[in-house]
Image 1 (cartoon, rainbow, N blue to C red):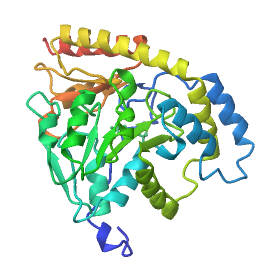
Image 2: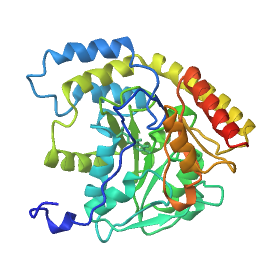
Image 3: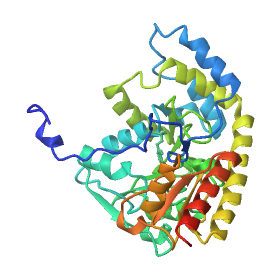
Amino acid sequence: MSRFLSAKYAHLTPYTPGEQPRDQQYVKLNTNESPFPPSPGVQEAAAREAARLNLYSDPECTALKAAAAELYGVLPENVLPVNGSDEILYFAFLAFGDEQNPFAFADVSYGFYPIYAAFCGVPMREIPLDKDLAIDHRDYLGIREHILIANPNAPTGTCLPVDEIEAILRANPDRLVIIDEAYIDFGGVSCVPLIRRYDNLLVIQTFSKSRSLAGARLGFGVGCEALIRDLNTVKYSINPYNVNRMTQAAGVAAIRDNAYYENNARRIIRVREETAARLKALGFTVLPSKANFLFAASDKIGGEELYRTLKSRGVLVRHFGKERIRNFCRITIGTTEQMDILLDNIKAILDAKGC
Ligand SMILES: Cc1ncc(COP(=O)(O)O)c(C=O)c1O
């Protein structure tokens, strides 16, 4: 730390992103990226736009907003494109959180939530998952905090049905309910249509997972016009050109090529179900997942040991040190070939331990 760092940041613990190693080629199943490349149309659109990088991007993201509004079945005024969904989480903590307006979220959820809360000076309450490591929506009825739920949840993969989200919205009319749908395209049902009836709902989506654009940084907030206006006030106070030209063009093309991505999501779901069955056959406990990853634990090997041994064999998965989930690893669903390599390695590791 330099002697210039503001005292208000002296005790921050920043987010630790999943490993992006450069030392060797891994079978990379640790950060929930898509194993499929962007569609050819997206690649062409981004390359074309590269020739115009001397000009600032459209701060209103006009074309992208119109395309996203059509995709989500809402009006352009209901949509805010952002630099990855992380950015809209940040905007939301800034816009809606303060001493009088704390946030509540699950004790096991996306690791960035408590970090943004701390960074923005917003008090937080972590609500424990139930005994099956799922969110019990009844814990969120009539509470005093704004609510932030990843649905499907990460890193567990479990998903709440829309009627339970609606119960939360109804029971907290004066609290904001933010539903982070980063993984919704892998089998969950989106609550975007509810924004027409609930002015306290903000839905967050990303193109990082099902739409193969993690490296482009593109996410969306969807909510009533007033919420989007508030978030725009924050955006225009920080970084009006937050979505660059190539990403805006890539996003429009990705929406045009939606069928390609829907087909990829179906492939991921199929491989996820096959992989879950194969892990269970090896004695793993596997949580029911509606995401592009599985959360799995074995009595025969600890989560950290499995993560480390797999890494030494060239397969990267994610392990979290948090007490309640220490025994688990989060495994991104890749191609069938990648999952074959993962499972062959897990079998070999268990065999070597004599299990
Ligand atoms: C639940 C959840 N929300 C948001 C994000 C952020 O996604 P991005 O900033 O790439 O859109 C992630 C990334 O892994 C996530 O797991």
